[in-house]
Length: 247
Image (tube, rainbow, N blue to C red; front, top):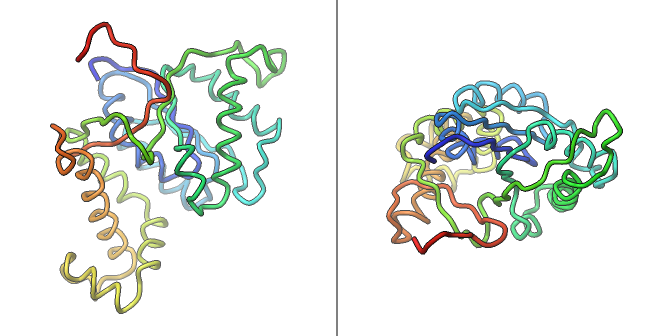
């Protein structure tokens, strides 16, 4: 990123801010604005995201929606539209429409409809006479995070430490990861890769598992995918790249 941009992450769950933390942090360091708006985040996640956002140089707000009750209704659309028109992003990052179908996190499927409809309506003469409706904003580029079929990589090696520290801040989520893998078989298996895993408390164990997973994932598309980047975040740009010349 040669110069900063206005980047808006429309996150479904709070950890997505850190999963896109490399891009958000690099943009902030380049003088840009990085902002995250999260649909679903309980009190513990909000508490943990505060230090994570500070590390990444990102601001964050919570839209207070219920993952079990979301319907993509008009009121929910207006909440998302308000954010888009307030931030006026050059780039919007959100979840992948393909991945969300089979991902069994609750709320992801109706959230996708909500986000796509809100992005469409934000640029139209819709609700502009209400408090929630500012001037229409359009022309942003959309990128889908951690997609099933990525078509671009962002080098995040220079901000890898910040991304890892931000992830380490998410104590509730990391303890949950430790709980998911807290069986004798898992403890023994991870013990082959994480020294002392069998004796770790759940939070320390979950943090070590996530660091291991993140290292593997962010190496996969870059260096192990025969691409000239070591650590990268992968995205899928919606629409075609327009170039002045072939790169």
